Length: 151
Image 1 (tube, rainbow, N blue to C red):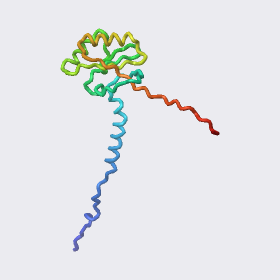
Image 2 (tube, rainbow, N blue to C red; image 1 turned 90 degrees about the vertical axis):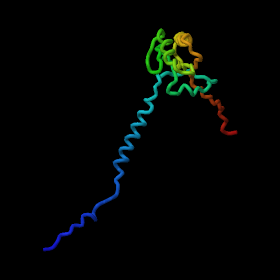
Image 3 (cartoon, one colour; image 1 turned 90 degrees about the horizontal axis):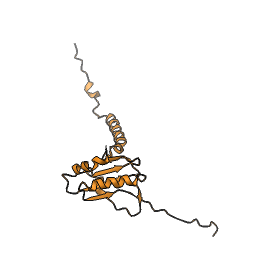
Image 4 (cartoon, rainbow, N blue to C red; image 1 turned 45 degrees about the horizontal axis):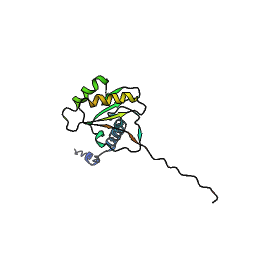
């Protein structure tokens, strides 16, 4: 009687298959690309255009106090809609533990002027040190004159 020897160990493939890992990583990348713009906690408003805008980088910080006013006179503190009567007390609550008492306003270009001024007054009476109005930098228009083709 003879012994049967099996050589199955020589057929084992020790290479790592990275295709499933790459598939999962690509799906995660696509998910993050789609979700990232939605994570901004800003109310959609069309900001006014300004040629003399000063950059206010502190307004983009996560803990910045931002009041948004839409074109239909709705007032938001961060993402939460509020009323003009409650705005001052809510802002003072937000600024209670901060040393830099500045509130940024994002008012729509077509918002009612009176609503914006009333919101600024409500914030100023709550003890705010500074108010910043956020605008978009107006792009300069290049006025080039076409030249005659033959000369």
